[in-house]
Length: 85
Image (cartoon, rainbow, N blue to C red; front, side, top):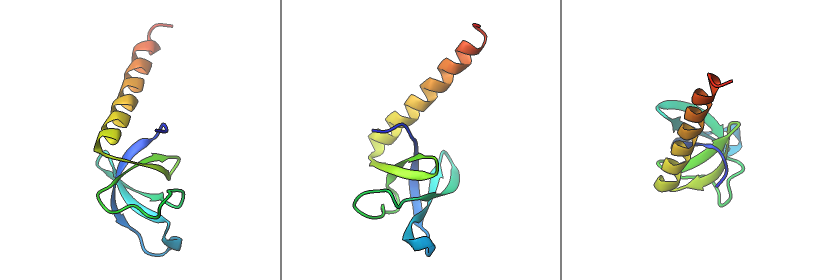
């Protein structure tokens, strides 16, 4: 699994060479490029990991949850470390 932000595909967008999708990331909808995914476009409702506006990997519900937990843990550690130095 790569380091990325999990997002759930809402819909594939017409045009743009069929390489854009609307994805829900923590309640915010964003357009992302899905052209780098293997095996064609993802289905609505599926999870992808996003890095720099590109979907790089498909994940299941468990993989999306683990990615979000990892991101939250990194954020907490950074907050704790800010006052230590």
